[in-house]
Image (cartoon, rainbow, N blue to C red; front, top):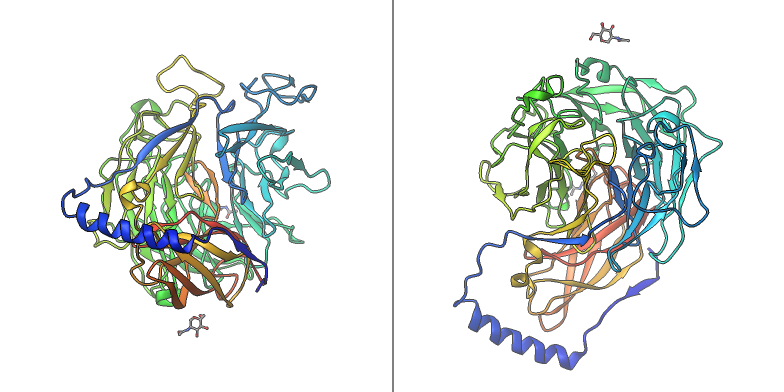
Length: 552
Ligand SMILES: *[C@@H]1O[C@H](CO)[C@@H](O)[C@H](O)[C@H]1NC(C)=O
Ligand SMILES: *[C@@H]1O[C@H](CO)[C@@H](O)[C@H](O)[C@H]1NC(C)=O
């Protein structure tokens, strides 16, 4: 374990005493008198014009968000630095001095233009173990490209670098990437690409992947497959309505799961999926997959019909010997193109999307303005709570990412081929943040702060974290690691929550300061190496995260 420690904020002893006494008086006095209304979250506008529509987004370990759109879309609304332009064979603009990727700094609420040479339209990506963002494929000149963004401080000048020496083995758009335990990335599928490959590349690639052929149909419902790295080291792969457990080391299908009831779920039907948090409390032995939303078969082929989207969710315990899909929870409204965000509290926020139609240009109407909170551990059939609505439609080509302060960053929506503003569902350049229930001031007294934590943690090795809370911690808080996924097309590639074993905790000052010993994940199949957000969670209220590097 790294001996370097991060020292953040240790409250002044005397001030803490006074504040504790004062807040205790306040709680005893206020709480019985004002039962706070159920908190349904709040929306805020972060930026009126980000300059680009946002098709893909990823949070970096510096707290900034990299946003990516297409390059062959004509001029954006943000210029590249003076004198920098791009010449290409684009259909619209062959000499283009505007940016199609930006990095957003939530502290200053500003964007900085980034330079992309080739088209990352409907591409995929994932962070590598060293914290660099690897971004693969796209369309036209970008279909075989590999791009890397090495993130920097918000004040830095880091930018995209496109490989000139290495290309993908297959052209890929609409594929899914997953970081592997050995630090490679696997890239699965894509339009007319029923195969998979690795970065760095395997010798005999690409490998034919019959599952994608078997799950194909007339509207290509096998695109952007859902891929979850299981603690066993195998991959759970879901396309259309079917799923398998796949051993990529031996190229074998280990198990075939039952078909999910209801509609097709992947692109262009616009469902979403998460692997629910992996818990030390069951020794990470229970692994559950959740799939929500989708569109009726034919909604894409017959887009003018604007068919109602799916309102069902399926949940399956894939670690069971004979699992089946439990369909107990019906969403309050139908939804396609919803994003599913794993929260630090281990619940799930279903956000963005539409109630009718499918993915594709102008294929949807009737936006799903209200997020739905999915309480992972509530009783079946009682897990859904409708949250406060936004007023901005976030449909095709929109994104959602958890930020380190627990808010959800929302960008994009462009159901048009180009930038179009004078229509019902325009190209959306505004950035928003949704603050879930747990950020309400009514929870301030439970909100923990991570005051000391390591910068680096080592597999299967204990480390200590110091956590404070204004009044009291009802026992030691949870320590949860949350990955930073690549958000695109209503699915968060590489999203993961691991709730760590808290082996001991020592109360070091009144009830307000705890020193906690947590144990890092036992191995890279449980959590592949790389940067994670570490959240302390006290009574279902998370701290702001600190970033830790998990490595061998
Ligand atoms: C792909 O699936 C179709 C049936 O859907 C089958 O006829 C064809 O042989 C398959 N192709 C390969 C290469 O397996
Ligand atoms: C927990 O799981 C790991 C990995 O499967 C195993 O090595 C270990 O023995 C298990 N511990 C307990 C207490 O079951």
